[in-house]
Length: 226
Image 1 (tube, rainbow, N blue to C red):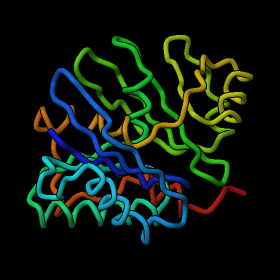
Image 2: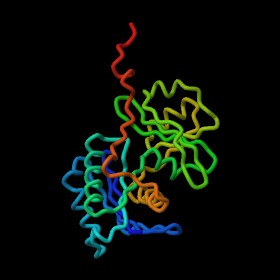
Image 3: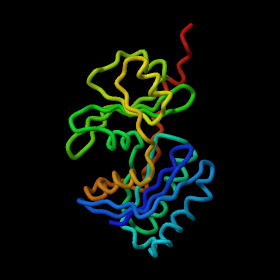
């Protein structure tokens, strides 16, 4: 399969042209995107990747996109672009959570992995996953304050992964088993998305929306106790 994978969830993003099947995976080319340029650069970047490989959009077999969590504007640009391409080209779409991607790339079979990203305002995006031999099961997602998460008792059975040094340092100081990992780019997202496309785990472009993992309305609008 020939696919394009897109990540516009963070301050900086990337696009990857990838090729693979059940037994192999190849990153044909990777293009990085500066934050704040997604709306202007995303489509030209996709076109450039295909042009340099002497390919056309119609030759793609599928598309992959990060659906969250992350920047409101960045996710909207990425999702709207990919959904439009899938509708026009009639190609399948795989959606990947960045938290899921961190757990897949850095988790080991049989363990529970907690992936953490910065949500801003001293809050965290947290995704807990059970790693299987051929799949990944979401246990829960949450968006706690950093101080709330650190106040929890550290679980010796759960392993935490994060690409953020300050969060890793804070968790380690609180007794958590934490691994500081490299940030993922679109080629890693493409590898995970390819598996989903091959297994038929596809998203409906008409209904796919961004996953912001926000707090519940009760948490957001309940007045603080005095």
